[in-house]
Length: 206
Length: 428
Ligand SMILES: Cc1cc2nc3c(=O)[nH]c(=O)nc-3n(C[C@H](O)[C@H](O)[C@H](O)COP(=O)(O)OP(=O)(O)OC[C@H]3O[C@@H](n4cnc5c(N)ncnc54)[C@H](O)[C@@H]3O)c2cc1C
Image (tube, rainbow over all chains, first blue to last red; front, side, top):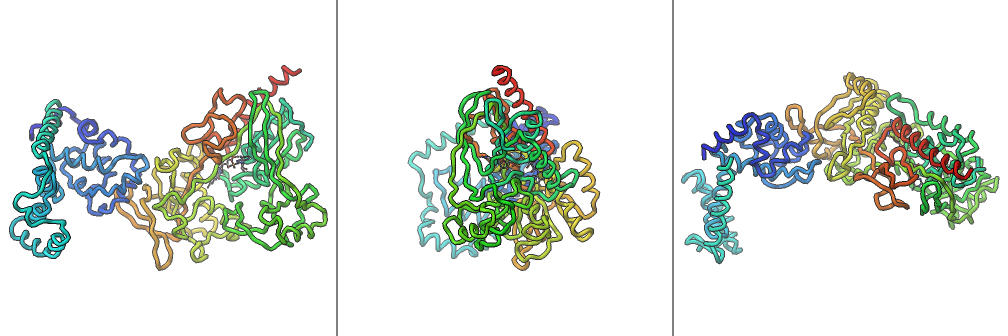
């Protein structure tokens, strides 16, 4: 995989915009940005981004490949869609943010300890096992994301919430043994495997 | 005036704004018979609501007066007010146009003495002042209105006020029995000059127009500057009636935006630049204007104007489309929130008042034309063979400033003249 990065660098030498257009979901929209800034101003997490979306778009155009792909900014997107609704040019900004994050991840350039990235991985591993989210395991994996010590602390702090969820049948303690799933887990795995193959082939073709 | 006979050799002009007035005068001064149709009780259109004109900063009333003189002096023009077109039939050189004339309840005995106005008491929103002021049920549309004749609001017909108005008139000009009538006119060519209307600022949800009192539109600011307007020529905050000295302008408010008007109205940048000079006029060095913009579009020779405003130390520019407006609950100041494109700094700036530079949209919605006509995706009339001898002038053709609207009107007049000349040649 690390190889893919060098392949891409070779291939799109000096033209990061082209690389984004070809490889990032909805990347072909980036050039439509007119730098009005309404997305950045509308983002509820805006103050926490190193580079707001408008700036990321400009950086892509300016060829700042390293800075963009290793940025934690696009991982901050919570998919609230405020920017998409307000963008005067109709850019699917949310999708582009996720596209950039996912592309950076594929190339192995995403920041190592980005919490959203970790969460995404936990969520993905959790839901793809049985085709249904296992709330109990997911909660535990999240609590213990940063190790044993903070895990116990987190679990204690959220005890009340956990109990309430169990009471209202939002979480089942029996899930620890494996939990519920869809009828055809094998079918789901096959679909995901195929999707992965297609994606990998796409990258290899570059 | 008034002797015009509508034939296939006459030109019908629909809309009596600066474009329609210009087209009508140009054609009439070339010897053509012209009928000018206006749906309001007076001609003049939107420019009559402006305080000053960029780029020369003269008063629109001045240009209007010159044009009104030309109309009065020309026997080839007939003006029909309170009139709307309901149907257009026929083809180039041979149109039959049906119009509906609404009752004015005042005939041409009226001397504009104003006694009827004094006699009545009921009050209504004054559309000329964008509802920022009231007027009575017997009124003159605006000081320079042409024709200089009072109007009686249909809302008072049948009420005491109506009888009072009638009783007050010494010239027997109030006629409460007037009815709407349908009239059929012939024309060889039609000039369509129905102009524009301001984009509805309430649709721009994040800017809080109507939610926050100190969010106003650029047209409302023009009205405030009128010495005889709703605020007597002062820029007052609707929240507390205090003078606003620190004023923000938001460009492209509802323009160049796929959620609103897709097009650029071209004039809003110049209108805001002009309005920053109103602040200087009012307050000298005590006023402060901040213009929030995506890019300033001051075209060709009016770039000079932009440069002059830029040189004013009391005017600053922030390159940013404001994301949203909130309100300081204590003093009703508006707070503009966004990110500055030059450096990506986040800001929350407080101002006394914010002016939304809203753009122009065609006054007639796409599906409301009384005839078949080619329009573009923004609703403006396109030049098209298929339109026959119906020619658009001014802001019904595009978002234009007065200079360009008048050029467009003159061009349409020439096209219309060519058609009626052809008809004349054939009819001998
Ligand atoms: C805030 C602001 C400030 C501006 N300031 C300036 C400036 O300083 N300088 C400048 O050059 N330009 C300025 N403009 C632009 C200027 O207002 C327009 O260029 C001008 O009004 C165009 O005139 P018009 O005759 O085409 O349209 P309008 O003025 O809209 O006239 C159209 C006329 O047609 C009538 N009408 C509408 N529908 C019908 C119908 N169905 N039947 C009959 N009649 C109808 C209307 O009542 C109206 O009288 C400004 C615009 C804005 C928004």
